[in-house]
Each structure stands twice: as C-alpha cells, then as structure tokens.
Length: 238
Length: 260
Image (cartoon, rainbow over all chains, first blue to last red; front, top):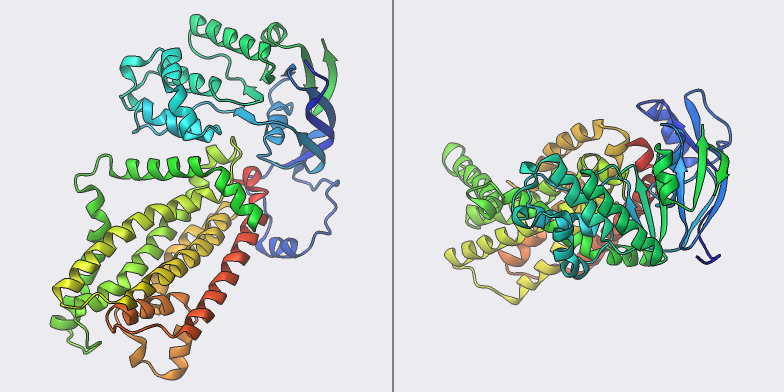
C-alpha cells in the first residue's frame, strides 16, 4: 500500500431535490439557464443534503468499506467518485481507471445471448473489445455457464444472470473497484470464489471501495471502514 | 470541442458495441430483417405516386415521379427515424446514466448510426431506380457526400437538443412527434421549391432540410453542381447550429443523473 492518494474528497456537499419533478416552472428554469446567481449553499424548501461536508482520502491499494443505513449517503459517494453526478460544493479528485460495479449487468439485454451480453456489459464497464475477447473464456468459466452461453439471458435463472454479470465485472481491468451491495450474489460457494478474487485484487495493489450495510462482511474484507450517518462521516475504524 | 472528440474517441469500442447491440436487437425476431430499411421509403413513394398520378393528377416535376419522391424521402426518413429513436434514448437508458459514467452523447449518436445504416441501404435502392429510369451516374453525384454530411450534422444537433430536453420535460416526446409531422410539410418532399413564389420560398429555406432535399435532387436528377456559395452558406449555418447544440447538451448533461 502506498501513500499516494487514489481518491480525495475535500469538503464535499451534495444536494438533492425531494420532488419527483425537479423543476417548479418552465419560467424559472429559463431564468436559471441564464443566471448563475443562485446561492448553492442554501436549501430550498424541497431540497435536502445527501452529503454534508465530507472529507476523506483513500490511498492506492487500500480497501475501504463504507458502512451506513439506507439513505445515509453511501451510494452518493460512489456516484461522485465515478463522476456520474457532480458535487454541489467542494471538490472530488480521483486518480486511476474506475470499475464502477454499482449495478451489475448494466446494459444487459434480455434478447441477447450470454456471450453477446458479455461484450455489451464489458465495454460499458470500460473494457476495449479486444480486452473482452481476451478474457471471454475466463469470464464464462468463472460464471460456470459454458453450456448456456449461447442462450438469451431472459431464459437464465436469476442466479445464472447474477453470476454472469458479476463475473464480467470482476474481470474488468481497473485501478479502483467500486462495489455497491453486489457481494451478496449467488450461492455461498460462488460468493466464496468472489471473495477470493477480491483478495487477489488486493494483493495486486488494486484500490477497493465497497459499500454495504453488513458490517461483518466489510470488516473481513477492508482495511478501514468509514461510518456514514445522515450524510456525515461519524467515525473511522481500522 | 477537440477535447469532446477525444473523449468520444476513447469510448469508440463502447460506441461500436452499442450500435451493434441496437441493430442485433432490432432484427433478432424479424423475418424481413434489414429489408425494413427500404420498405418505409418505398411504400411512402408508392402512395405519393398513386395520389399525384391517379387520384389527383398534378404536374410537380419533369422527372419521373418515383425518383422525384424517393430522392426526398431518403434524407427525410433518416431525419425522422433518427429523431424518433433519439428523443427517448436518454430516458430509456436511465439505468446506465445513473450507474455508469460515459459520454452521454454516445446514446443519441448510436441512434443516428443505426438510422445511417438504413440510409445506406435505401441509397442502394435509389441507384437501382436511377438505372431503371436511365439516368446516367455522373461526377455531380459526388455532391451527395457533403449533402449527407450536412444531413448527419443537422440531425445530430437536433437530436442532442431534443433528447436532453426530454430528460427534463417528458412533454418533449410529444412535441417532437408533432414537430416531425409539421416538418414533413415544411420540407419539399411531395412538391418542389421551384413552383413556390419568393416570400414563401425563402421561408422554406429556413428549414435546412429544404436545402438538403433540393440539393440531392439537383446533383442526381438534374445532374448539375450545387452552387458553392449556397453550399458554403448552408455549411456555416449548420456548423454553428451543431456547436450550439453541443454546448447546450454539455450544459444539460451535468444534471442528467440527478433529475432523470
């Protein structure tokens, strides 16, 4: 583990709207497009802070768990790391290629075969076509789906579906892995193999940021756990 | 702008896979498959020929009617199918937008690429028609390339605006359907601008598709060059429009994941 930072959050605030429709009126929107004057640090009546003044640093090669109840802001942190969403205030700095396993099986299409979906999902996770081609056998074997790989995934059982999706995800090449509640996949045997895979990644110096509300699981996997409560980091352990 | 292209280029593999995915899904359970690309313009052309020769005979052009209509239906079908695909594409892929980071413009661009495949297939049929009606293939037809380029850019700009607005206001989907219907009449598809008197004529040319449709007829059916001044003017206008749409999209993109 080096002391070089992979992820730095500096006084990050993130605001969300509670409304199903984020806008109040067309007129207001048109005015907002042309003016930047609204004070971002103030909340309007329908808004709330998903993150308040969050600062932390994760070094390269470190495994960090984010623990908290539903709605504590764990997933928001992951979304900020992948730059899916931008912070309202503060800065987020990330160094390295990210494998965002926020949703396994992203881009899977039910009518496409398992093999075809490996290519779709693999490139969505940031692999190149040639990289997927190289790894396709390993992915299929890891998922134990050799005989079903030509079948459309709509005919897969949910276990098969998750195994394939997780196998693709775990084989993508990245410096930082973000894992959002996807560890509870498949049967215990498959889960054990996933943990093994993650331990190997840790040995290879890959940064891992895992989110869960299973504290024991995080403790067994991570060097350090950040406890998040109502958008704030309340304590750090490890 | 250059950094934008570099960003898109980095994701070229994803782009190819997305195009391939769309095309595969579209034709997976269809018997006629890729033939559907030509069936649409051909059936429209047939209807127009029947209306304007049998039901309500009118002199619209000295050219054979099937060619006259089909030449205009080529770019029109590309424009309308692209927009129909692209308008809901960001909303339909919300699971990607809220979970994965990639250049969002790839999604509408994929829709255009799929429609472009259709366009190329229907171009083949266009050349078959040209041979049937004994129209020689000439060097003027090289004008097709810049015209198709402009058509692509104009459609791309429009899709960027419409698809990103649809994330914020779902009404846009209905507005687009309506606009496409209205644009159909504001584009010289079943008529020619030659027959139209000045004030309205200029109004028609406010629609960039008018220039593209008439240009396509000029370089293939009339076998004439397109005046380079007009070409340059249209290029500048469309380029400005595309850059503005791109900047607009970039501005809207920042909050896609939060509002979708």
